[in-house]
Image (tube, rainbow, N blue to C red; front, side, top):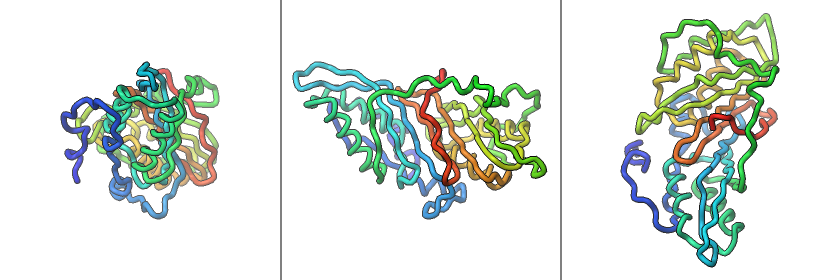
Length: 273
């Protein structure tokens, strides 16, 4: 199956009734094979946290309800869920009746679990806007005065670290951009990298992140590529990589990957989301 077979790459009629078959799973092993990740021996823990901003259904009397939802898919799930199929699936609730809000949540969790191949959590509501990007302990590297002329494919040769200086720090950049592998539409994100190990060369890290700019890859795979390249080229003892992608089609996604034993970052949203 190719990317052209996905619903993302063709016209799809607006769903008129609830339809779980709209969900389109994609085997993670396909993308991980290109990165050199063994799907049977993952070097990281993690999750994909989706925020759904456009959610509606009818109650038993036909009255519309509206809401938002946070969907959490474990990185160990064998499948990721293609974003347009998720949008269409959520829209299929718009004209369908359910006995209770809880019935809607449970139906979503069951359908998404089936598609992902592992337990998926669904909670109504969204995490709050996170102001950590302005926190003094988080260093933004976007203001570095560097010349850049490499926009893809992702170039890990830019990465360097100084083994003489072992540090614990959190670096962030809002300059991560990649493209949809089907439509070529841009995907924008702020990436947050927390690590303990040889000190990263910040200019090289920024050049590396910018080298994704013309690259076509799904969100989850980009984050796994960043994690793998940092492990290979910087040898951190601990590493956490989270990307907060901006919203498209009423959805945003926040993949997180980290070395085993790492603490899961507090769920939050950026202002751009």
